[in-house]
Length: 223
Image (cartoon, rainbow, N blue to C red; front, side):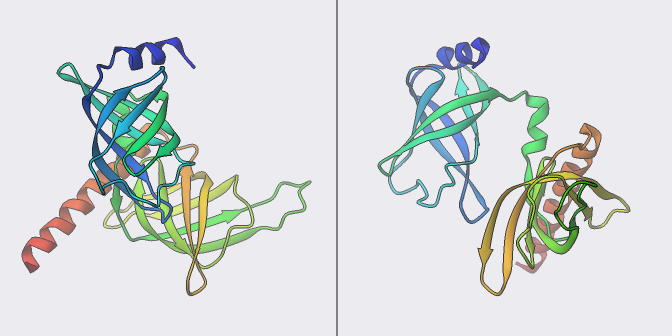
């Protein structure tokens, strides 16, 4: 654990307002307000209002935490140590997040075609495969998508995504974060991109923001 991160956690005052983006077992996420409580750094607690903490939290995935500390915000990635009752999460800080990186965490609902494939090396016994699916949401760091089958491999996946309403496509390596079997022979698969440049990540986020604005305009027009 870098001493700088421990120092950051130690400097956060007790009982500060905070927000967390929790990852859920169904592949979605939920952003909640809470209160930061001190512990032995890099550990800390988050306390939530009654009946707000979801029961289907994916405790294996990291969360994004923002704490308002002395007129400024401190943002870092954190893991879940334990869930205490129905109002408290014991967390441990993993790494600070630079504000310039925050765009990569922005995720928006976006339905578009995605193709995932695997090509084994010359000495591998695995078979090549390709599946075509549809994204549920998209960010600069990864995608959540529906596919017709479980991936036989989790690493060295090649992903191709058609970005809607643009002439650009995303073609990159990725790995599987989780796979959940759904009804009707479908699989919900979360992928994390491995080799995108910051320029490509920024372009994805811009597309996400543009799509969100378009969806908002449509809801306003049909209201």
